[in-house]
Length: 226
Image (cartoon, rainbow, N blue to C red; front, top):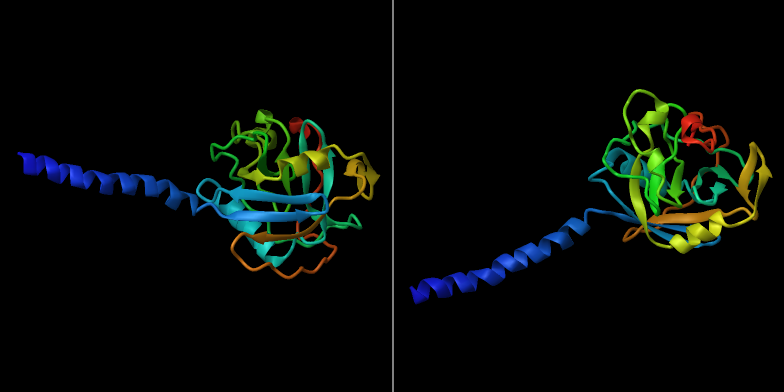
C-alpha cells in the first residue's frame, strides 16, 4: 500500500504541469496585431476560435499593408471609433470581397472590443472596423430577421492602448470629404500595422475605387451602416 500511495504522489506533479501548461498553449492561438497610429500604438488580441472569417480577413489586410495611410474617419465619444478604409484625402481604398457576418458568435460589443464595420447588409464587411468605447450591447446579435437585428461581429479586443483609443475619441471633430460630421481634427492616421512576431508588411497601394460599397455608419443601430 505505501508503494502504491508513493506512485500516486509521483504522478501528481505531471498532471498538474499538464493542466497549468494548457492555458499557455491556448493563449498562443490568439494572434496579436499592433496598429501604429499618429496618436500612439494600439495592441490587439484576436479571436480566430470565435470569429475565424473576420480574423482571417483582418489579418490579410494587415499583412497586405492595406491599413498604412488610412485614417479613423469617425469618432463619437461614448459610442465608437471607426476606421480602416479611407485615405487622408478621404478617398476609399479598393478592398477585397465582403465576408459573411459572424455576429452570432456569442461575443458582445463591450468596451475595448474591436468589431467588423459594415453597411446595411450584414454580410458586407470588408476592411473597416470599429472600437467600442462603452458597452454597446445594442450592437450585439439578436436574430437574423434583419440587418439591425444581426448586430456586429466582435473579433478581438484591445490589450494595450485603450488610452490611445480614448484620446482619438476625445479629439475635436468636423465634417470633411463625404462625411457631414465626426471626422477627428486633426486626422488620425494609421501609419502601419503588423502581426506580432511577423515582419512588417510593405505599404499597399491606395487605389481610390472600393470593390464594394462601404458607407459610413449612422449613429443609431436601427439605421446603422457600421
